[in-house]
Length: 615
Image 1: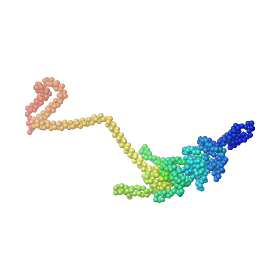
Image 2: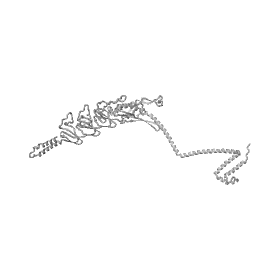
Image 3: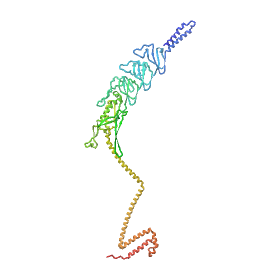
Image 4: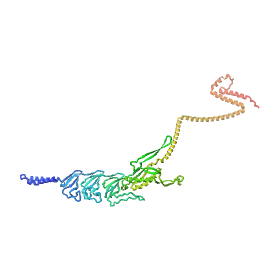
């Protein structure tokens, strides 16, 4: 301002004061014009030099009026109608000309455009505007038709924008804002992961535009009643939920996605809608009895105890149940799930899913498990007669009856599905009260006192040992058979020879039998002939005839084997035998000799008269 006045005064002095006072000897029309032109140019320069503004790229020009405006009234901070003070209008980047703008305004170009990166939001706070209504904590959201234009301070202030924290936020992007009006606080956007829903607790009663959740400001914000389930009018936890847009926990939840909202106005609790597995295990000592067999075949038992640790992911330790006087640690696994429709009920009634598990369901699960496993339950089994045998129907099948009886320790093994079903049936209503659906209940391996099982296990082991001994005996027999087969294979040649000998002996037996039968027939025929001879020749002649036949056969066999003896005998026969012709030249020598001898003998026998029989 001082420089402007200096140049204006200097220009006016040159144009109007200096020409009249110039001495006449120096005065000329040209000098007067030159002085007036120079003074005018100085005045014009002074005015023009204060009438433009250059805003650099990416910057914002803010104006603060110093002179020429009316004062701001009614607690206003930003001027809309040219009042003195911070101005609602701004200069965008570039060269701006406005007469004497630098005289009446203090122009600042130091501010930069506001950039909101991806995954962030810009929380807006207005320093000026209409006051909030009584009970109102946040300014109304920008009207949808001029939502973006409302960031302009002039539009905001002229269209009823309210001062204070805004429900409308800046989404990722670049904005030119008048910081005389706006304070921007960057914060993280809300990301709801897959498998979760976001339950909204609202601090504002206003229109809502959160993508899937959109609503005008409700006229009635009474709590929404949850539908009653079952015939017994199931009593749910007190969980007041309200329509979307009201103050309180909204009845509808946000599905997975990224959302931009004022975290001071809307707080979101993520609820896991996936199936949850709650394990109750560990925290006790497990006893076992180990059965071994020594070298003598005797069963030896040894009792061992070990600690079962409580897992870091477990919901709680195992449930201890009193059964038949025994303390039995019972492990179980519960599968639970919260539907998106029930998520708001969980948050409004208890809080988080973890709090529902710890505060409500875990005590109920432990109590119900003790009641079922340590109490009575319905079981279907065969009806037993007085003689201890099951009763049968007409088709010969056991008659099944349903009875309610105390739970036994061994039922944890033999009737596990029934016990699981009974526990699940009783736990489901308790879960429904907390807006949690119980999907299933499964029992783990029960830590049954080993003393109850040792008798059965000893019997099983003894039975298995007996079977093992039998199998070993069979194996030994098989081994003997195998060795025998191997030895037989090694002696196969001799066995074949023996078989051949057996067959030969059998055939020789048949041949000799046949020879015997032939000899018998021959002897029978000979006997018949000799009988006939006896009748003709007499007994003595017949006997001598037989003797000669045998002698003849013996000599024939001898001479056939020793022909050299016969040859020698014939060559020396004339020395001691009378010369008797016994055959022709062509007759066999042996046969002829024998015929001669036999003939003489027979002749003598015929010629010899028979002796008279003794009278």
